[in-house]
Amino acid sequence: MSANVFGNLFQVMTFGESHGPGLGAVIDGCPAGVAFDSELLTQNLRRRRPGQSAITTSRREEDHPEILSGVFEGKTLGTPIAIVVRNKNQDSAAYTSEVLKTRPGHATDLWQSKFGHSDPRGSGRASGRETLSRVLGGSVAQMALQNLFPELKVLGFVSQVGDQALSKDEVLKISAAGLRGEILVDDFQTRIPNVKLDSAVTSVLLKAKEEGESYGGLIDIFASGVPAHLGQPVFKKLKSEMSSAFMSVGAVNSVEVGFAHEFRILNGTKFHGDASSYGGLRGGISTGENLHFRVGFKPPATLGENAKKGRHDPCILPRAVPVLEAMAHMVLLDQVLWSRRDRL
Image (cartoon, rainbow, N blue to C red; front, side, top):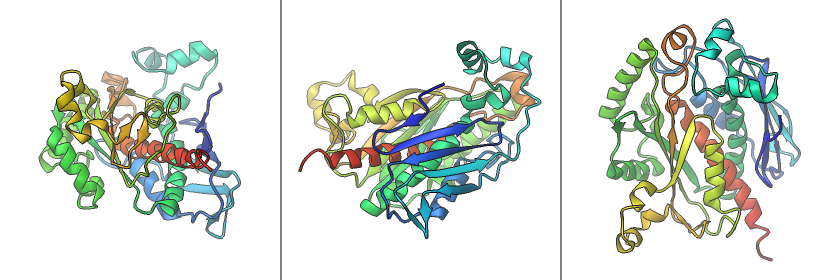
């Protein structure tokens, strides 16, 4: 298996399986002298880790990061940064051959037929646990961006689960308040920053977990304080790099720039009369305005008795928010480093 490295100048190679000894990342291309924020890294892992609430998987992991290289006296060395997280709470008993045959839509059987030999325990690298490594890489990128652009902020939140959704106006109001620090997304169990909807979706997911059902939905990603001119004009547009990053996450099936689903029915006057239509991009290059992407997730593939007996999330969106934020940070740092080569 190849293609385990993400990025161009800032690169992250991920490794490890869901039920193996551990997972990790080797991060290459991070400049020297970046203040390494261990607390930020731990916090981001905590936001993603399993077992954090009643609506997530019952698997419980400490997800404690071990820094093996690339950091000395609290700063990056400019050499590869290796970080590993040990698995502590694997339970492979539920992953029998019969269970694996009855998970339509999951990648496990396709991986087996493609490679001829794969690790089915917890779905191996086809598991959502693989995203832990992305959070490691994204956290380092976030540290570097904070050094370069202290005002830059990436905000993600769940805007829809099943047929329960925030309106366009609510999404825009929440994003503005969240980017100003007036709303804390993590205060809401579902990471839908709306008291009424958070409660309603929590009830839906608790019932789904009990019945072996699952749900998909939408996550909105915003970024403020992004410098203008990030992205290349043809093949490495910022929008294509972001889309590729988000689409590489398991269960992601769609990516929109802004409210792209509305654009098909708008005429040019209405479309171009609203700056939010651009999502902070023109010609694939950042304008300096807020970036906005909407990322769609399909429902998890483990259903019925398999879901009841195993340890699975009825909806992965609440835990996927920090993963998408991590991918956004990686792309932004990569593009910042690249942009420094555009002009003398």
